Image: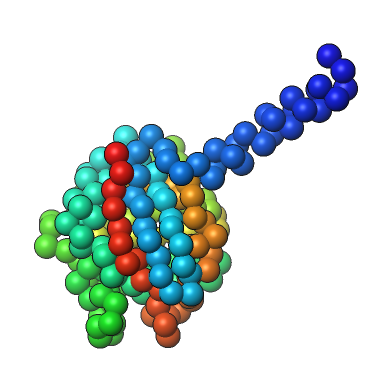
Length: 188
């Protein structure tokens, strides 16, 4: 094998993970979020049903009901994460003063913490109150690694496409002009 062939083979091996990171579907189910505002585009999240089956079931049920449609990103901290999913108080065009304190009509979910995964860039976790078993509808997407969250919050998925859209989400708690999940669907 020539040096050129070795270089091509090495490049193919090195390039493969980057390509896989930008795939448009994962083992699934996949949460597909159409975002409008300063961040405009599609985010695809591979939901980890094998890691957090109860949380993934709740997210997919809410998305299937249309509960996440027109919900804002209400807490966006630069260098940390973008939080959304308050289906009670985070509705676009409404009074956002209570955004981040709401939940859905479904019951809270018991924690499904794992020590096998870590909160890295693009990881999606469930938001909760102080009670570890209080996750309900809100979730967040990591801008950067933060291992402090490991074992404290349930990991539910990974962004597999559209991280540039997440990066463009307006910062603030809540942002002055929050970005909106205009349509959220689930693909098997």
